[in-house]
Amino acid sequence: MTSVAVVTGASSGIGAATARRLAAEGFHVLAAARRTDRLAALVAEIEAAGGAATAVACDVTSDESVAGLAGAAAALGPVTLLVNNAGGARGLDPVESGSVGDWQWMYDVNVLGTLRVTQALLPALEASGAGTIVVVSSTAGFTVYEGGGGYAAAKHAQTAIAGTLRLELCGRPVRVIEIDPGMVRTDEFGLVRFAGDAERAAAVYAGVAEPLVAEDVADCIAWCATRPQHVNVDRLVVRPLAQAAQHKVHRVG
Ligand SMILES: NC(=O)c1ccc[n+]([C@@H]2O[C@H](COP(=O)([O-])OP(=O)(O)OC[C@H]3O[C@@H](n4cnc5c(N)ncnc54)[C@H](OP(=O)(O)O)[C@@H]3O)[C@@H](O)[C@H]2O)c1
Image 1 (cartoon, rainbow, N blue to C red):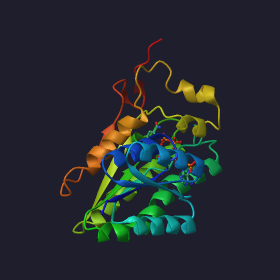
Image 2: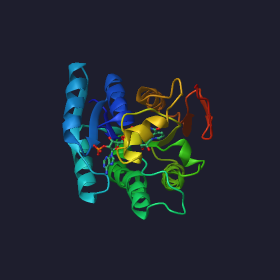
Image 3: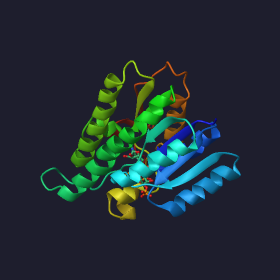
């Protein structure tokens, strides 16, 4: 039977690119997010390209919704891969004046979302005998920057989940892989961060010749997930050539 790969946050950006790529690698992709119209379009696109995919409406902040996702995954076949990708940033305010609501949202989606989905799918991943859990954290998962306190706090916590889980699952047939992208130009990440302000969102990438794109990160995820099962890439840090560090970005003009 075809292996099932669950991808959260598959309605846009890195998640959608990962769903397309994993389908091309031969997985039956279970594409999860809240916006089902987008998921339906993605599934149609994957099927037209000869792949297999199924859409599931899922809000990773809801126990009930995530239980539904786990049920849908188990019904499709052996679940060997989970990509915890749903997440994002809200705001770029200093700690001094950051919105508690923004911090709460970032913690709920990035951290507790990853926890909830991982807990729900772990039994199926383990039962497959060859499971893999990918956590899409960020370079903000191991470094901080001004204005990024809430996002870095959430991504540090996601990184802590990945590291802890790898220790706890040692001896069981489930790999834990953390992907830490730097600057990735996706359509919505900046818009979500800046509450729909397209100009502010675009300014993040101003003068950067080639930021990463979603397909670059999907490529990293697919590469890690398709190594032989005994090979566990603990953590993969990937940035554009122009970004040597969070604070060191080469911009032209
Ligand atoms: N872009 C970057 O520079 C960058 C860098 C490093 C790490 N990352 C991380 O990579 C991941 C994807 O980022 P992206 O750039 O592709 O952003 P994006 O295009 O905004 O995608 C975020 C995805 O998360 C989903 N999502 C948000 N809240 C959700 C919820 N409550 N339940 C289920 N799904 C939810 C969204 O789908 P719905 O709204 O349809 O639910 C969307 O598909 C995030 O974890 C982000 O932190 C991004």
